[in-house]
Amino acid sequence: MHPKDILDTPNLDALWAKEAEDRLAAYRRGEISAPPLAEVLGKYMAKPADTKLHSK
Image (cartoon, rainbow, N blue to C red; front, side):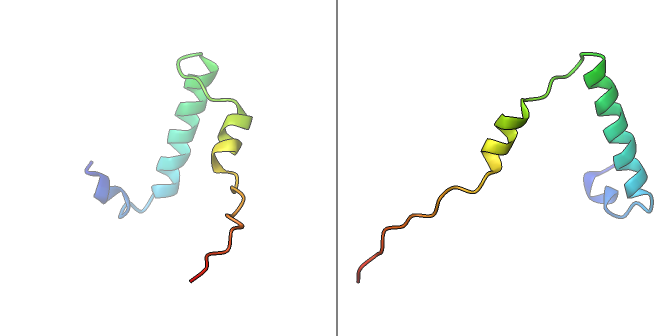
């Protein structure tokens, strides 16, 4: 199946559910690993905004 065709698949939710189940099973069998939660959250946490004012 071509990747763009997946979006047109009527059972897209079912495909993603199967993918999630397969990944979880592989994780539980030790076939794949996962990063620690703190690492994942740290990557996506908002960074403090630059507080310097830019003068014109």
